[in-house]
Image (cartoon, rainbow, N blue to C red; front, side, top):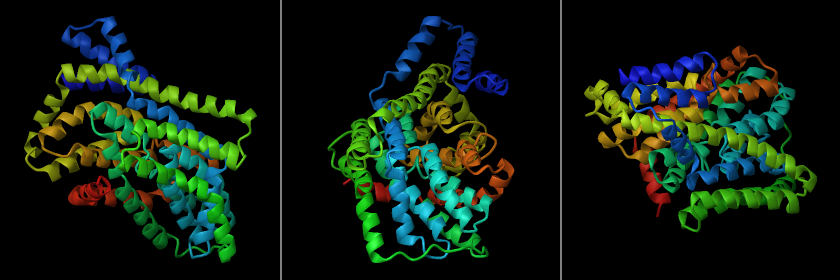
Length: 426
């Protein structure tokens, strides 16, 4: 009954068009009334406590870094480097998109920011070369979801804060699975693009490649600084956000000089708007998270899936299917905030490593960004390409299948996550 009331109070208002943040508060209040615990002061206190977290301070800084990256020339130079290196091979622009997505993901940590950058910079080139619009848009959307997987990742920060898991370990654990997804996208692109007739960009000379590398070296140094700094304990993930923001501002304003001081105010305002949405969701989710614990919703859910508790693989498959379904209806941030406090006790009870589960969880949520009807990244690419959602979904489908196969492999073979993170962590 508790689970029914929680889901009804959450999904009912959402179906009526109530913003997710307010639906989260309503679901918490509904549980309080059911349990006879209603107190407006408790609601207000949990909202304040939800946003009062040191690790969450990394979110606005990484979002600011993403805004600076797109307006200050860092994204454009990364794409230019990828174009110079692999643009000339068959299907090269697709490989450019995947290569650039991996680099951009290590700068911003946001799939939406990466989708906006890749869509604006690469989609016109791919269409001009003769690529199918839906297939090109589908690849760009699918490559963008690498953003929340390769560190830094806003998704890992939210999961780590809500679930009480080491964010540094999550960051390091996301590197290899992110590269696996990139490899799967490359193989899929090689297969789907081989029948297309398109014009190849000319092969660039060594001089042009060297110039592109030198021109982008400042942008490429940012992921190196972050990963090395985290690995050797130079700074925490929160401090890494500050480093990313300050470094990107320095490069954009002093080195590349593409971000004039007059435009700085607009960049800060844009980052602040996105931050306010994310942080308000986090604050409101704290109310429902507290009530989920008090009402023992995880215990009720655990009793429903008790037959699977002795088999970690079957349990993980069931949870992954559930998250895929949830991801079609909810965006990434609210899914993390709602599902983490529900699933974490079950994961711990089943003896599953929370860091390993966190990687699967965030990958699954990232894939949800390209599943309709919500599909935030799909909407971004639709806006850039002027494609209909139906056409774009046809282009996304083969890449979506490839990413789900990688997720399934990670469930079957946990060592693909745990072994690399052990190496990165030492």
